[in-house]
Length: 425
Image (tube, rainbow, N blue to C red; front, top):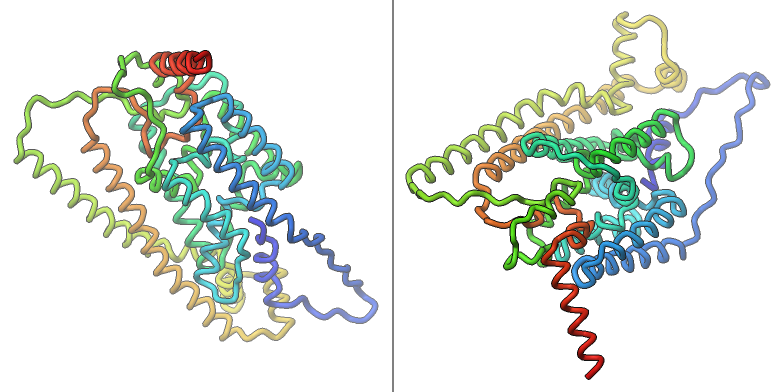
């Protein structure tokens, strides 16, 4: 997010403004924000490391909802209002993507650090970044009031949206077209106490909805959360309850506002290997078809997608004016013509970018088709269990289940008794 303004200005200044007759116009003096002191970047990185370490400790060792809550308040205060949402691991997806596909774009080390460190912690400790470090998630967490449950089939369907958002963000950033995550961040205007009325209203809507539907942005939109949900499946440690003593009281499931508690599944009494084998082949075959079909339709979407790019949209406008389709000129096309820009070069650049969109659109479509197929496989072959336990992918480690699980309460109480006895000895 931190370099969005520079990125946009690069696209705008490709065609300099027209010359004006002397004395007819006074060019305004350009203003630039004061540069940040370098030591602030080190402070930000150090605090991110400290916050992630504390969150992991509070989740896995202290197992304390109270400590997680206070850390979340600190993240809202510092990473939110003090640092105004930047640098943001969510928006850094775009910076890193653009740097990978554009040799002329250099991404600062601090941005890479903010992008990679939560991913590394997730591989070891699960989604502790979501628990109390991310200011976007933290502010939604503290407004939860009377959360309602939604149907599992609807929950699973909506959880595909973050992957669509992720794919689009990567596609537009890789082609140098837009930073859509930053442009439509619902909380950045709130943390900066500025911005358009529409974005402030959008953030307010998310918070109001979040009172009744836990973390709506995190669960159903956040592209970084989509990455974390994949990595958390392979994490070394995750949130767990006292599974060996689970009495299936369902209190943890009721207490979790995020639908992240996996319910017991009935253990089948019959095991027909032929049916099981054909089921596996069928779902895998469907996944392959969805991936191929997604690649096809994604390639078809490359034309409307490419119109987001400034060069492509300008080339289409110039072509329309040349053919008589459009009457008059826009400010952009007028500027281009007055500066003597080469229409042939503009068309060539636009065709090259549209070709990049054709390739990227096919990859995007294949990615979404694969995700849908994997979701079907996951739903079809859910591991059988007879207890309630946090789901690795969707659990954001908020710690609420610790406070409500009766077995966990007894465990903590016995632990305090044991420590008291040891002190007396």
